[in-house]
Length: 409
Image 1 (cartoon, rainbow, N blue to C red):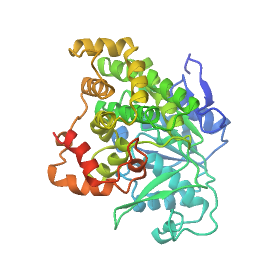
Image 2 (tube, rainbow, N blue to C red):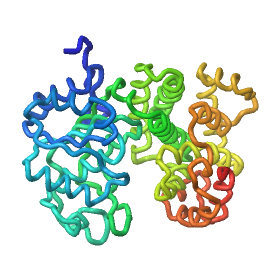
Image 3 (cartoon, helix red, strand yellow):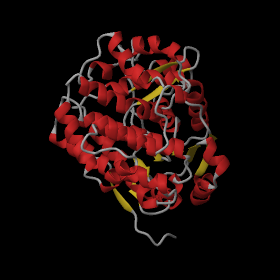
Image 4 (cartoon, helix red, strand yellow):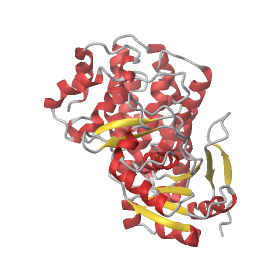
């Protein structure tokens, strides 16, 4: 047994669930809550392929749960394919699972959310699954998710904290949204030692995605004290935490700070009050080209900050974020190391320096997206809600192309 003390609390103020657990090893926390909180006896585990191959974490989880484990799925393809969701749904139904656990990053969390939703609505085919997705075929009466989910994440993408999910229909490769009455995980277990098994490329880029949630919240033209406070708290944990993780892979305090910062980032940008901007909006269209969500933020966020400032759109808001970052000793030290004059730097410059220090991609060329894709990218971006809510609403293809030209590489 661990000598440490568990911290168990709601992730978000004013909402009882999801709860977050940290301070004790993930397998110990899972065993405790399966037994005491959920009183479950038939647990189905969905584990990432890389974790099962490269670590003993799945075996530890299975040992901790003993004969309560009735099924295991190893690996899901990216973008949460409907075919795989249905395979897991039918398998979980066959073994009469009463709780789902996800172990790892990637598509697993969205997959588990849709599986629980599908089980509650007796879905077993793609035609039936289509009636749960948003759109004209959505059925009139839908049961809420019932089987609870425990999520044990290993990246900072923070999808564990939302009550919606995206799933991709295999034949069209179109991503569909599943929303209320779908329910997300009821418990999220944070374990920084487990997170240290995540490759830097995933950990640090997903961390910059969380930073992007904070920055675009703070730079929005819609200002609210509570969301600003959450976003600043998230930044205060994420930026130093990511830089420390880059310096020392086993800085577990920094890893936990990043995990807690990503919760604040998600709370800020999913409040329902603030609309995000073009870094997210254009980034959504890069995903289908094979660029990870975190990588899109690494490439686009500094350029979007600079472009908006050049249009004189949100300069006071950007200045506030800039001052907040410059007050961090680790950021001041980084700028000095890189020969950047803090007195002359703008927010885009500082974000660029942070992302370069982390060794993340900074151009479309870095992620193998060529100039030939820019026109379609720009066209598709105009339809994205976050491009429309950018501090300068993107209404013309030429506007998007100006931003893309800044990052083409």
